[in-house]
Every structure is written in structure tokens, then in C-alpha cells.
Image (spheres, rainbow, N blue to C red):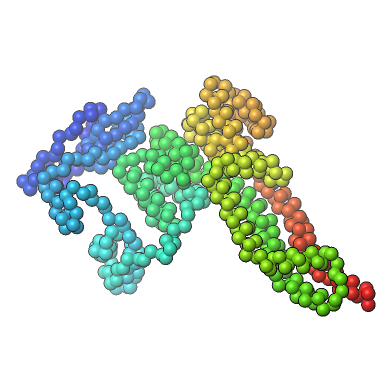
Length: 508
């Protein structure tokens, strides 16, 4: 057969025997007539099966499996034995780089090159390009019709800068972009390439391109995402796996994107309600410190010239000013160290984090908002997973980690254990006092009517609106309280300084 002729994918075989090596040419190098892939999948009866398949690419192998009624879950390229010519070329390459024939080779990592060149019309253009060497970068530019004039490796930012942390907002935007492109018919690998290379966060770009390489090698998308547990939780991976198995990945990605957007919206509203009072209080404390450091000492020297007894309140403020001026560094280290210790303890110590989350639910004003937000996340997450066809017990396992509070997580795990024994969801929800009566009632209606996902979606909509209203009410309540606190701090200092003046005026 001619070397350029496309090969027809061979039917899968469930035997575990190795395939015979390709025939040797006169040069001693094996002329490949197709790649060998090992695969695992699910047939039409739902039975898991596995085997080997010969095809020219992973895409053709997946297409052939689907044609035969097998849903591929995992597809990997099987390493072929290295021919004599291949071994000679490997030894030559290793000798050229000073290595030994037994040492493993590592592919060179891509770098970013800044280039300047001339296009076909003679216009001077410039840009950036990822490549493993300057020579390959120049070759790629010529292939695109650009005459390279200057190509240099882009230096890395000082102190490892340039890579900001991947946030949940980045994952939300990625989910929507991927869902939109999949709905438009863009192939999965190409969609990852477009989103990854177009992202302005280098850390996010590296992660997406790494996932893309895994998918190109035949790994399922859900398995590739599960290798990044810090950014793609069990809920995300379970929904993607359900979409891959059912062949509706674009639909499930759209559900994931909508879920992430609504979850981020709730988080943003709660943070907004907390940010305003925190910012105003920080400014108030800053103004108070400035008055104690620079204003009070001027009044102290003025009062010393009077030679009269000062009021007790004024003496207390002056003593406070002297302490802050003398031990300002100790106070700064104490406040900064305490804040750092609390942040680290919340991050590294599960018991401390659980205690904080339990206490936050009991706070007078913020607690009800956190309760409603947790119920909204529970209903939205369970509705999304149940609509995707995930079994209820498995869905509850993922929902327990998505509520954002340890109290609700423990309650949902208890519910999961009860549901696994055959008990209804609404009955297991009645066993704890966390869920309002309306949630239990809507869940019971959903179970009876067979529309549990729809009923839970309505519950989520209701409680998300409740969170919005509670946040607005909290903001309206905090504004006058903040003004009272600021007035008490600054006004108290001003009164303390003017009391001696009023006293002297009364004597005169």
C-alpha cells in the first residue's frame, strides 16, 4: 500500500495479545500502517469492555468505536517496539546532546518569543509566538507568510511574576467559553486550544494547554480535568463524565456554565455586602491612628504651657497617643501577625475552619444570609446534577462539598447515607432542622411528580432572590451603624482635645 494512502480503522478486538510489529523497510525503519490504541468503553447494554484498536489517529479510533456502538471512556496510544533504525537515530541524538543511549529523552518545553517581521505586502508587523526554539519560530513565521527580521526569547518577569493565581471566576469564564464553542460545533481539542491561547492569565493558559495535550493523547476530558482537583471539583468532573458517556457534552457544559455563573453571582453579592463596611472601618481606624500620632502631640505641648489640670478623658487620650507613638511597630506586627495566623489557620487547620463556619451561621445579621446562600447552592447543585442524569446518591456526594459550609456538608452526607438505604430525599431532609419547610415541601412535590430537578431549580431561584434582598437590607442597615462608629471614634478624640480649652474659657 502507498505510504500516503489513508488507512481504514480496524474493528476493535478484546484480546490482550500484542500486535505484530510493522514490516521493516530496506533502511531498517518500521513503516507504520496505523497506530495501535488500547481502549476502555461501555457497549449498548451498559457493560464495560476493553480492547485494542488500530487507527491512524485518536479521533478516528473514537469514531470507529462509536460506529460499532461503544462509548469510549479511555483511549491511549500503545507504545510500539522501536526498530533498529529508530534505535540508531535515538543513539545519534543522545550522543549529540552528550547523553547515554539508556537515558530517557524529554521534549523541550515551549517558550514565548517576541518577533518583528514583514508581511507579504511589505508592512512591518510584530507579535508573540510559542515555540521550542528560535529556528522553529522563524520557520513557523515563514509558513504564515511573514519574513522574520528579529526573533528573541521573551524574558520571564522578575521574582516569578506574571502568573497570577487561578480564581473561581477564571473557571466560570472558561466554562461558558467552552460551552459556547461546543454548541457551535467546534471540536473539543480546538476549543481548548482557542480558549487556552487566548487567556490573559499565563497560569490558566498553561493548565488548559496541558489538559488539551491529555485529550489529544486519548484521555477522556473528565479524567484530564480530575488531574487538576484544586480548580475542577468532583461536581464538575462528574457532570463532564456524564456528558461524555451520554454523548451530550455540549448540553452538560452549558449547564455547568450556568451553574458556575449563578454560584459566582451569589458569592459576589455576599462579598459586596461585607466589603463596604470593612473598607469604611479600615479607613476609620487609619484616620484615628493618624490623629493619635500627629495631632494629639501638638495639643499635648499646648496644654503643657497652660499649667492647669486636664480632664480625665483628655489625659486618657494623651496616654493612648504616647503608647501608639512609642510602640507603633509592636502594634503593627501584632495586628499583621494575628491576621496572617488566622488566615493560615483557616487554610491549613480543618477544625479551626469548621469552628469559624459554625460560628458564622450563628451571627445575628450575617448568619441568616449564609443559611439562605447554602440552601440556594444545595438546591442549584442538586438540580443541575439530577437533570444531567447523575444518580441521586452520587449527586448528594458531590453536593456535600459544594454548599460551602461544614454544617450543611455533614447534614447532606447523613442524608446521602439514608437515601442509599432506600429512604426518600424529603424524609431524610426532615431529620435535621437546617432546611426550611418550603424546601422540604417542594422536594416532596418533585419526588411525587417526577420533576425533582425542576422543583429544586425553583427553590434555588427563590433563595437566590432572598439572598439578594437580604444583602440589600444589610447594606441599608450597616450604613447608619458605620456612621455612628466613625463619629464616635473621630468625634471622641476631638472632644477630648477641646475639653481643656472649654474649661479654661469657663475660668476666664
